[in-house]
Image (cartoon, rainbow, N blue to C red; front, top):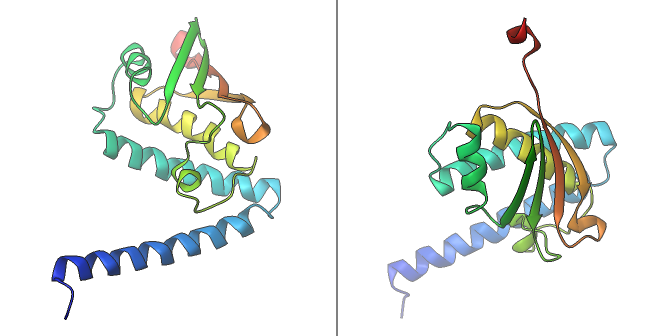
Length: 165
């Protein structure tokens, strides 16, 4: 007896997802072997796409002012974020309990590799630009892929020097 149409559609959808996951895994296997300049370029693009998907997924009302954004990020997102601000410097700690929250990692599509942390830093940078219309520099302090329990970034808000003149 044939499967009901809904089950058949789900079977095909799962088959396609497995196929896409294998392709993505193969791409990242190659990306992890590339030189730093190429990886940096690829991870920036990946982060930009991921931020866009994150904004859509969370239905975040953007852009918002920086303080509202920081408050929102402490209560939404893939993990709890601890934020400490001192003027233009923000210490951003994603509480991960030793597990990477990248969906490609959590779904076992790709293996965890420290090069993926480049994407994480760009993700934070693009998130600030997209959600809070704020340009920042991001320094990676520690990550799960490097053996830490959490992913920590030092974020410095860029000030428009010409606006101050």
